[in-house]
Image (tube, rainbow, N blue to C red):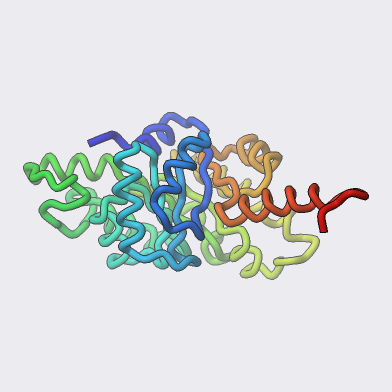
Length: 262
């Protein structure tokens, strides 16, 4: 089985650029995004209509392509984590983690003993249907998985240092829109400044405790800013956003000028 390139690059501190997949449900989109030069894709199950079957098919192709797939489940509980890991997903992006206790529970669900309490399932997509000695399988799976948690509330930042110190959590990020909403600055002139302050706090906590930093943005300049701020896992836009923007730009250009098509 291939190594998890996403985890390997994160451990080396290498910058990785990916995108959200929120609309295109055919697994073949992974071949297109890989050919475009992206380092990973992040499938959103929290705010999109993707089913487990679709995500499992995407995970199978992602492993075959050696193109890392990250999945955000609707919730970071044992049910979702177990199903996704057993479907062969190696990288999780867990929303709404507000306390170190929640972070510790997420970490425990993601890894087998002695590092956690992940439920055992003999063989399946997560082992490529190979039967392996239990100790070998558990050690390999524990080393392969990569777990990012999202801090999206004021309460989470009140316990930021404790959350960042939890073993088994590999990367930290914010949920900028939900965080802005919770802080009461969404849509205001203060939003950018407040979010930038929280990003700085998160980066400092991550560095202190040896975690990677993931951030999202929808502009090239934003990517540069996030890298300069200390993030190494960068999510640029989404399939829906990039498609809409590209088509809108082309249509605007076609319709501009005296000989425009109407």
